[in-house]
Amino acid sequence: MRILVFCDEDLSIAAGGARQVLEFAKALSFRAHTIRIVAPQPAQGHQLAQEFASLSFRPVSVLRIAGLRPFSFLIASWNALRQELEGWRPDVLLWFDSPGQIAPLFVLSNHACASVLFVNGLPEEEVQGVWRLPFVRWALRTVLKIAVRRVQAVVSICREIVIQMQDSCGIPEESCHVVRNGVDGARFHPQPHETARKELGLAVKGPYIGFVGGFFPWHGLETLMDAAPFVRAKVPTATFLLVGEGQTKQALELLVQQRGLADIVRFVGRADWTQVPTWIAACDVCVVLHRKTRSYPGDSMKLWEYLSCARPVITTAGPGYGETVEAIGCGIAVEPDNAQDLAEQLIRLLEAPDERMKMGQRGRTAVIQAHTWDARAQHLEQVCSAALAATR
Image (tube, rainbow, N blue to C red):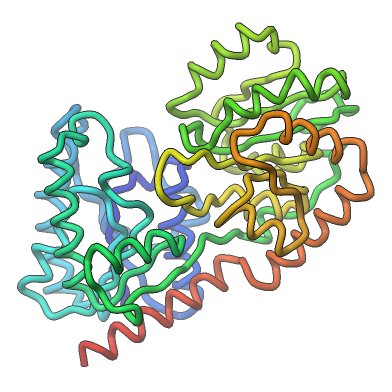
């Protein structure tokens, strides 16, 4: 198939949304499909990672001025998509939804192209600032309803989003699919703790508790900081490694200072993508929490990356993360927002190296068997094929 991918992500930035688009595109291209991506022109001085250089990419110019970027991209991408549909004539348009970016909807009104809408989050719960005004949120909900009724299939990373769209938009169950995130098992592979720590300049002894990803409210890192004093009391040499950037970082840094935790909590900052597996490998236990700031858990790529590196995971009980970890037997699920429970389970694993190793091995095995990007792309390929058949 010839698949035209549309997204609003700057693909030169090592963020979750950009990585998802690129990994799906690469995995689909490995499955003998021809892929072309329409996305914003990378910021000056930035470029796509070398591993994605072989993908066909049509950059769209945008005005990088606060408030104007979304509208400039809407207009420019509308024209770019129109030209691609008329000139390149793809079999399927794979539309990674972003609130307010409805150029595909405009273009599809004049072109009979099979289309698949990939929704990572509900707009009224994801948007910030002026986008949260009641009228704007109503407009975003309305546009999403129109979009899901126009396409042949809707995909999301978690079933909670699919169920809500079925209920609110009235789309049939057979048109909805759950395709979770995945991982590159070759890039994210097991490494000895000592080797990783020496490469990163860390003290070899440890132990280390790690979080690698974006700092957002729903990741519940405040609970991890609340648990830190209890862990220190039982395991005085433990260090918390927080690798990444995001909305809550400044508040977390202030919390660490106020609690007197600066000696055991290290803010690493944004790591180069090539070093992310090394930071994970340096950790004895990895953490991926979920705070209910929205009605769905999502599906964090960091969970699959931790497991692919054979590291045990402590996560929040419930749909998504907790259910997955417990089913695989690769970690422990703790009560939501319960720092005491989190601390007790962290201490338990830090004091049980054999159990950590067995959990890590189970996680790695499960990932390689069923949770790679190739496995996810195979599922997405089936969805695209069915959408194309429906239009014929």
